[in-house]
Every structure is written in structure tokens, then in C-alpha cells.
Image (cartoon, rainbow, N blue to C red):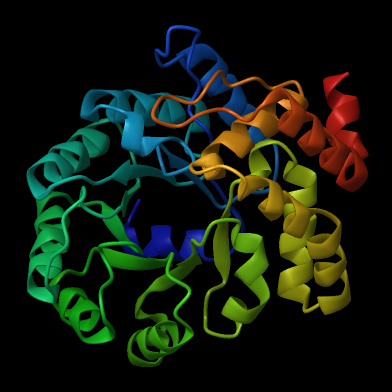
Length: 309
């Protein structure tokens, strides 16, 4: 898909970041992963992000990333753009980018480099190397040790027409405002803070028309209803859903380091769509915590549990 068209498609609706399925021995389990992608694609989506943060990109080998992407592409059959996770150091990121392109991905989500901090010049060189290595549309994930300022981002966009998206995982309102004021509709903007639903309404006013919903993995109808309430400006309904589910969900997530992914896999188990365990160094929720999550899901979306029965 043309990078610009791909980015415009993503910005028009809700995005899904499927978990990656592992068997009891921690190996990628393709059949249930493809089944899960197919189930998600039965709902209204504008993009499928394979091997992203929710998909445990950080625990996959480069070869596994490509395997996961290939499975998502095969299952998606062109229904929506498939975006591959990409990252680590520049050499590995370039290798993943080329592998994802061969596997049929429509774009790349470039996550922060592994561990190291660097100056703006170094970050720009990293992003540009990935952009130059592929014809795919690239979305930069601004977070942690990879925070581009608006000037650096503008220069990258000038030199790389396939840099088409900006995903914010920082929550710096001033920076986001500067980026949008400078770049306007040159980029598609994606909300990428953990549990992005919390920030969806204020970010919409800054041009962030979509976000990555991890909750979609186990409550897709609820996630879509929430997104539609945000886009319709129904603040009362948005706040009701935040109070009823999102805020207590966040409180449960915050009990354990690394639970941002673990709680999503727990949600999948609760609704009868088991994706297996998380890989170490992450840990799964305790049995008691999973029961608390079940109660939250039952209150917010009884339909999700009835489907699992």
C-alpha cells in the first residue's frame, strides 16, 4: 500500500494491536494467533499492528517478528493495513524492516532503540536509516529513550517521504502541540500511551484521531463503542466508561511492573481466547488479580464473557 494512503487509512478509525500467542514452551503458536487476528478483523478496524508492544515485540527475535507479521498478513488478506513492529539498534531495525516488507507488511512502527540514550542527531540517523532501507510507510514511536523534537521530526519528514506517522507515548502536551502545529496533516498522529483510552479525548483536539487499543484484544465491541464516543464528543459517555472500567483497570495494571502486556493476556484468558503466557522477564497476573479483572470485564461488557461461556 502507498505509504501516504496507508497512513490516512490508519487515521480514520481504531487500531488493533494483537497479543502474540505462545505455547506452553514459549514458542510462537501460529494457528491460534491467526484465529485471533481473524476474530479481531470481524470488527471495525483500520489497522492491525503485528508484533507491536502489546504483541511483545521486545521478547521476539527478528526472525520471529517476521514470522508473526507473515501470519497476520496471511490472515488479513488485505482487509486492513498490517503494520510490523520494528526496533532495537539500527542494524537490527533495518534487518527487521526488510524482512517485514518481504513478508507483505504495509508499514512499520519504529519502536525506541534498545537501552541507549542519544542526541537528536543520532535518533535522526537511526530513523532515517530505517526509512531509506524500505519502501514501506514508517511510523515513529516517540517514547522513552527515543523522543524526537519537532525540529528533528520536520527535517526527517523533509528528507523521507515514507515517514508518514507519529505515535506519541510521552504525554507531553507542549511537545505534541508543537509537533502538530509544525507538521499539520503531513503526518498521521496516533495515541500510544499505555491504556490510550485515558488520553483519547484531550489528544483528539491536537490532531490525534486514532490510538492503539490493547483492550480491543478481549472487549472489541466495548473498545469500538468507546472510540465512537470520543469521536462524537460524547464526554459524558466517555467519562462513564473511564470510571466504570478504564480507571480501575489501570489501577490493577499498575500493581505489577510489566503488567501493561500481562493484563491484556489475562483479559484474553478471561473471555476464553487464551494466548498463552507472557515471556520472561514479564510475569503473568496472579490468580486473584485475574479474578479482579474478570469482575471488571463482567461489569463493563457482560457480552464479552457470555461469548466465552
